[in-house]
Image 1 (cartoon, rainbow, N blue to C red):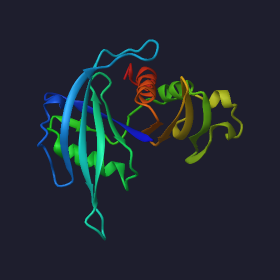
Image 2: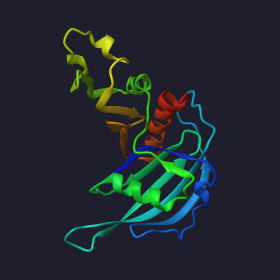
Image 3: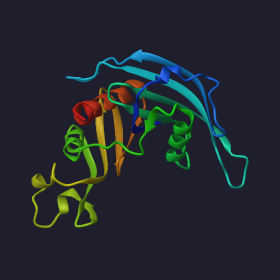
Image 4: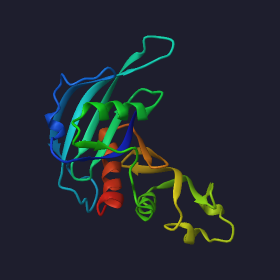
Length: 211
C-alpha cells in the first residue's frame, strides 16, 4: 500500500514542470516530470489547478552500509500549493526526503516543514471522516483525547482546541482509507490512486480553499 505524505510549498517563478530529469544531488535524482489538470472527485471542489507529477530516486544513507535506493512519486498542486511525496517503502525519515527535494528545486520554490493549517479547518476536515479512531488535542500543555478534557463538553472542544495528533478512517466507494495527522503533517494510506486523490481533494476543500 502506498503512503502519501503531505506538506505545503510555494513558488514564485519557475514551474515544477521545468525540472529536468538530469537534475540531481547526492541523495536525490529526478527522473520524470509531467503536468495534468486536476479532475474533481468530491462535491464543491474549489480548485482549477495543474498537478505537476514526477518520479525520483532517493538514496537513503546508512551508517553501516552503502545505503539503498528508494523509488518515489511526488507532485505539486499549483492551486492549493500542496507538495506530496508518495512511497511504497518505509523510510527512516520522510523529512530527509523533503530536505533533499528542497535542495534540488530552484531557489524560488519554498518547501515548508508542515501544512500551516488553521485549527478550525482541520476540525472541518476530520468531521468528514467516517470513523474517528483518535484525536488528541492540547490542554494546558498536555496531549489528551479530545473527549476527555475535564469540565468541557466534547462539542465545545471541537473547533476550539489545537489538534496535535489524529487517526481517522474514510470510506471511498469500496475502499477503506486511513488518514494520520501528527503536528502539522498528514499521511494518507490508500490502496488506489482514485481513493488517495479523493482524500486529497476533500482536504483541499475543507482546509486549503480559503488559506
